[in-house]
Image 1 (tube, rainbow, N blue to C red):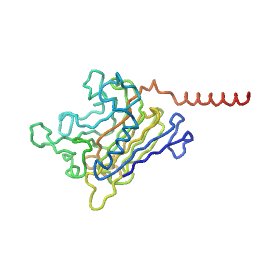
Image 2: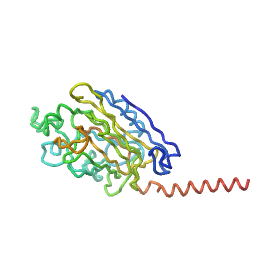
Image 3: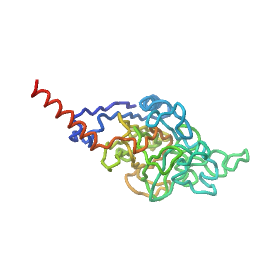
Image 4: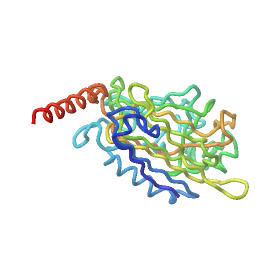
Length: 305
C-alpha cells in the first residue's frame, strides 16, 4: 500500500517537475493506495476526505456549508434501477447536476462528459422482485469476466464506460447548473487496476493549464488475475484551482473493446471539493499582479530605508 504527500513550493511557478503551471497554485497533496481489498486503501481514502474537509452532503450549499470548503461524494448506490444496467434510461452525464428543488441526491454540482456512454452497474436485485437478477451486478451483463474482476468499495453499484475508456469531470455550483465552478481536489476509487500507467487523473485549471498528472497505482499480483483489487488516487490543492479532471479508466470499455493499455478497470467512489463559483475564484493574472506589486513595494521600501 502507498500513501504519500507531494508538496510543491513557490518555485513551482516555473514548472519544476511539471507539478504546477501557475502562481496561484502553491501546493499539491497526493493520496494514493492500492491493495487486495477495500481495507487496504481505506486509510488513504479517509485522509483525502480530511484534506478536503467536512462532508457537505446533498443539495445546494446552504447553512453551515461554505462554497469552496468541505467536500462532496458519489458512491452510485442510490442511482435507481431505471438508470442502471438493464434499465429503461441511459445514465446521463448531468445526473448529479440538478437544479435547486430537484431531489437532493441529484444536486451535487458535478457533470460528466465522454465520447462514449456512462453506465452504473445493477444491484443484486435489478427488478426489485426479492430474487437475484435478472441483470448481473458488477457489469457481468457486459462480460462474465467483469463480475469476476471488479468489486464495489461501497456496495453495491460501481461506474464504468462503454465505447471509450476516457471521460471528463466538470463542476458547477450545486443547484445552479449554469454556474461553472472549480474545486480544491478530486479523487477516485478504482477496481482491478493491474497495469502500470493504465489509469490516470489529469487536473486542469480554468485556462486549460495542466496542474497535475496523476497515475493510479496498480496491483502487483501473482497468478492469473488480481480479482477484486482496489486502487485509490486523490489530489488536492490549497485553493479551488481545479476546473476539469480528465479520467483515463484503464484500456478497455465494459464490453472489453480495446482502447489503450491491456487493463480492464471500473470506478467506484468519487470524492471532490465543494464547488466554488468561478466568479469567486481570483484570476491567476490578478494574483500575479498583486504579487508583483508587493515585490515592488518591498524594493521601494528597501531603497528608501
